[in-house]
Length: 364
Image 1 (tube, rainbow, N blue to C red):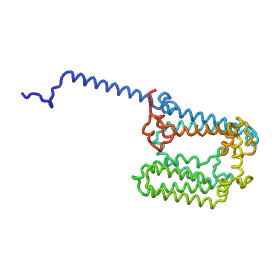
Image 2: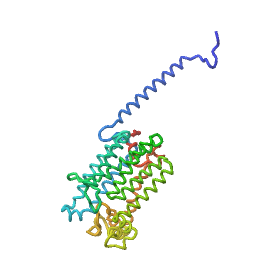
Image 3: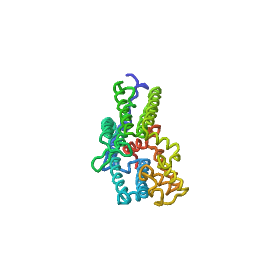
């Protein structure tokens, strides 16, 4: 009878006991993890119970909520005069903004509860629908200050260029992430749709939004490592298109000239910029105090939207403006320690990691 060698070691009874113990521990771990996973399935309004959110995700949601509340206070100071004069109700803009805040937070929660795969699937449909809505503004849109950017549906005014931006980013991500594997006809199709959308926005005319859309797509293509020659060609084409739009549209050309030297026509094309600079300068270091701006009293135009920062700077001064800019910057600097893959990505945005952090359980 051959003797056992090192390769044919005879098992002992203790080995079977140890193996059985490891199997029991493995089964217990699987059961525990399964129970924990079941506890973290979407419940209520949130995709995960609040205690399972990472500290960074909680912080960012808190900062967004704080930004929303502070925005209402600033708007109340900037809008009460013009609301009382034009609408007969000093709280008109506050009431309207509150309704939009409720709607936006509802969309925010919906976005968190919807899987990213589902959002990417909706990107193409949303982009096509948004492009049709943008085209509709040129036919039946409401013209304000020489630009047709709004669709009026009953009591609601919609700006399709704002609604289409998220879907433009989603479809751009789908296209550029799979650039090497997508057929040439598909590439040409979606690039043509992107170009058509930008041309429609220029036709409104809305050069700033068209430039923002083009820059977003270009940066996404750069992050996806598309050929540099293609990127340089796209950048040159965009610059030529923007220059041509400025030369062909007197309104845009006058805005560029007035931006470079607003004091040359302080009572005409440079009036808005001059009044905003006067508001910012009169705030000094500490500001005039909350609600005490004088430029908003029929001097500064569009003080509830485009020039609301000028009102803020006048009331809170240089230090308040600096704190506001630092606060907004902090929203972009937050990155989740609990998501190393997203933390290392140079193209990760706050929305990217908040979405993933809110769906990934952590120890409470």
